[in-house]
Image (cartoon, rainbow, N blue to C red; front, side):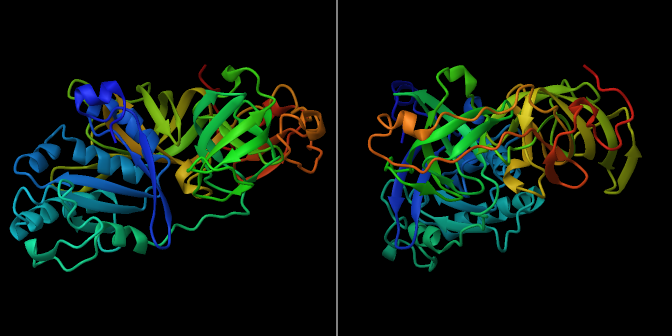
Length: 442
C-alpha cells in the first residue's frame, strides 16, 4: 500500500495507508501502519483506530529472529497493540513459500511468539489467531493453499477475519470521536473513529478539551460515502460548521455532544507497567519526562510521584515499595502523571480504549499504562455558545434538511469519586482530587 514518492523510494511504509474491502458478513477498513522504528508514532495512530490487529511475521530465515532482537520491532508492535486496547491479534506468518511451507518453521515461530504474547497480556487461547500465508503468490489469503501445504487445515486469512466477533460498543453511550486528522476543504473536515455513541447529521458538538462548539454539516463513512449517521466502530469524516480557524481543532481533540463533554485533565493517577528503559537512563523516577500517546493524542508528560512500586527480583520474588524515589525496568507501579497540555480522556473502566496509554522516550516504548483516577480541569472560562440555527446555513447544506435543536448552555465537570458528570460549582477552582493534599506543581 506504499503510495507516496517517499515510501516508494525508501521501500517502507511511512504514513498510515487506508483501503477497504468487504467479506460475506463484514465491511473492513484496513490501516497499513508503518513497521520501521522511525515511524512508530504513525503506527500508534493507526492502531488507535483498529478493532483487530494483524501482526505480520516473516517466515524467512533471519527476518523473524531480527524482529525479536533487543531492538526488534515485532516485540514493540505487539506491546503497543495490547496497550492501545486491541483485543484480538491475528499473527500472519508471511513468506511461507520462501521456506516451502515447512511445518517445522511454522511451529518454531509459534513456539517463539507464544510465551512473549502471554507475558504481554494476551490470552493466547482466545485472543490470538494464527494463519500462514504467502503474500507473493496469494496462497491462503482468499483461496486455500492447496497441495503446497498438507498440514494446515484451518481457514484462509479472509475467512478468519470474517469469523471474528465484533467488540461490543454502546451506540447509546456518550459520543466520543478522537480526531485523527483534519483538512481544510470547503470548511474543516475532521477524520476519526466513533469509539462510543452515535453521530448524526446536524448534531451540535463540542471539541474537548477546549470546548469549541461545532455542528455536523456532512458525514461520510470509510468509503467516502455520504451517510446520515455512524455507529461505534465506524471510521468517519465530518465536515464541521462554526470552526473557521483550523487552529481551533487539533489531532488528539475529541468530538462530543455538548451536554456530555469528555472529561479533561492535566493530572491523573495511573497503573503503569514499565518495559525496558533506555540503557543510559535506567532509572524511572519523579520528574521523568517522556512522550505520552493516548488515543490520537501525543505530547510531553512528566511523572509527578510514584505512589507504589512492585519490583521483580532476580529470584522471581516481588518486592513492594511505598513512595519509592525511583524504580527500574520491568516494575509495575502506580503513579501520578502531569501533562503539558489539557488531555481529553476517560478512566479505563469507563471506556477502555480511551483510558490506555503508551510512554515513549527517544523513539523507544518504555511503558504502557491505564488511567484509574484523575483531577478534572477547571471548567471552561467561557460557556459554550448556542450555535446559529441550521436554517441560516441551508444553502451550504446542499439541500439537506435537519431539525433545529437548542443547545444547552451549562458548564459541566467530572466528579472523580462518583464517576459522573455534574454541574460545575460557582467556584470551579475549588474542584480537586479527593486525596490531593499538596499543592500542584506548576
